[in-house]
Structure formats: structure tokens, C-alpha cells
Image (cartoon, rainbow, N blue to C red; front, side, top):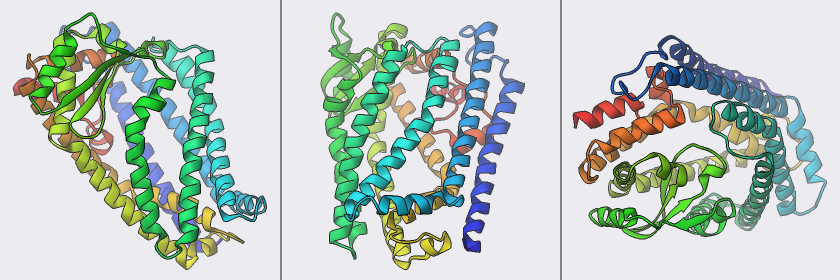
Length: 413
């Protein structure tokens, strides 16, 4: 390998040390401050629950840190231990077809990644989530989900790989533009069909019945210009006691999905407040703005990849022999993880700003203004959320303002 490869390694290690440093100060901050009841939670959380939240946050974050270190070690061994070159040569000898070579190269890598994640997934689900009362999943269901996810991922990834490589083969000079266009259209297509084809493979969707909540949701949403096609409840409780709700659909017509755990733990005003927050994201065009930014960056990334791969410099730097196209894509993704590091706090900042705007919108829209605050308190309690994140960690990673800060802002409004 050339010295440039080791310089990239050095920068990557620095970036990872920065990540781990932020994780460390966040865990330490939780250990120091985590047993104090924060403002706004008086009367809603007791010492026993706070201790449980404290323990869960530390254990969950520490486990995530261990998993990240393991993943980084595997990545570096693969890239710098000569395995990438050997793997590239091996898949090249499997077929004379460029498309079939690429299909084998990326699918087998995805299978290896999935298998390596299995022990961590099992430990997280059946050790940590069990310990703190979240997991309701059986081992049989976990295995079934894993098989389903692998099969679906194989089909969808296979389509993307085959179509993408076909475009590259047919248009060597403009593939970056056509591949980006294909990915964009495919992602929009998946947004349409996933709620109807993929999600029902994992959960049972039932119409919301026996309550006038659906009518209240429709009336509230009509004030924002959103037409609700259906309101469904899903059996999320067969996997976890965590709560959630979400919209699906593009444009003014939405399909609303509520977790049964959410309906069991919140009153109607709080459910309406949660959905009013989601309506705020739509009304303020937050999702559209993020899609535009993401696609613009993806286009820049596609063009950059085209230019860099065209020089063959990555193959020389990492000493990759033969057809190095697929290996260079892997190296590029590795390099982009370094380049994206300084942009993380910037994206987090804009995401938090969107959340604040959606909160303000929800307070004005929901029937009871304080219902959003009480729903956040319940969500925090039920999910054992970290009530004391380190400010620097929150600024760098948090897509939402810390919950204590959100509640204070909502109530001040």
C-alpha cells in the first residue's frame, strides 16, 4: 500500500476517537447527573424509575460503543489486512459478467455484515431489552424476522445492484447521473409500496375501531390541508413495548399508523398532539427539504465517485489488482464516512430546528396545548430516555432537542 492509504487510516482513527470521546463524556455525564429529577418531570418520575433510566442509558450506550469498536476493527482488517484485494479477485473469477461479478461482490458482503451483527442483535434484544422490560419478542419471531429481512433485502438489493451496474456498463461516461436518477426514482417507488407490501409482512394492520379518535384525527388534519385515507393500529406489542406513530404517503393524502403500545399508554388528546407534531413536519415541508438536500448531496457524491474511480488512484493506493471497480466503491464509502464527520452536527442542528418548528405548530393545532408536553413525558418514561445528555453530545448527534428542553419550550409557548 502507498503512504496515502495509511494517511487515510490515520484520519479515520482520529474521527473514530472523536466519536468515542463524545460517547465517553456523554456516559460520564449521565453517571454524574442522571439521578437528579429534571425540571418538568416533578411528580411524573420517581427515584426508582430514574435509577432504572440511569442504568438502561449507561448499559445501552456502553453496548453500542462495544459494537461500534468491533465493527471498526472488522472494517480496518478487511481494508488494510489485504482481504479486500483477495475478495475482489475471488469474486472476479466467479463469472465473466461484470453484472454478476458485482452482484456476488455486494450481496456476499451484505450477508457477511448481517451475520456479524447477529450476536449483537440477540444480546441487545434478549439481554438488555429483556432486562429493562421492553422486549416481548420470542426467539422464533426474531429468527423469522431475520429470515424475512434477509430475503427482502436480497431481492431489493439485487434489483438495485443489477440495474445500477447495467447503467454503468451501458453509459460509462454519464453513469453517475443515470445511476443517481435511478436511485432517486427507486426510493420514491419504495416509499409508495413499502406500507402496502413490505410492512404487512412483519405487522398486522387493523382499522382503528370502537372509538371516535379516527374522526378527531381527520378533523384536526383537515385544518392543515391533509386528507387522511386510513388510520391503522399495528400490533407492535408482539415485539417491543416501545411506542411510536407515523405517517406514510406522498402529497396531501396520508395513511396514519399508530402503535398499539401508544394507544394503550396515551389518552386521545396526547395521541392527537403527537400526530399534530407530525403534521407540522408536513406543513413546514421538512421532509421535502431534507429529501432535496439529501439528493443534492447524493448527486455530488455520485459525480465525485465517477471522477475518482476514473483516475484509478484508489486501486493504486490500496494495491488492488485486476478489476478494481467494486473494491474502489467500498474504499470510497469508507472515505465518505470520514468526509461526512464534520457535517454531522450541521445536519443535527437543522433537524432540531425542524423539530422545534413542528412542536410550535403542534401546540397551536392540538386541542389541548399541554398535551404534547405530557405525551413527551410519557414517551420519555416508557422508553427510559436519557434525561441528562451531555450538551456537546446532544449538539453533535441529537436530531431532536433534549426532551427536558423541548418540554420547557412547549410550556413556555
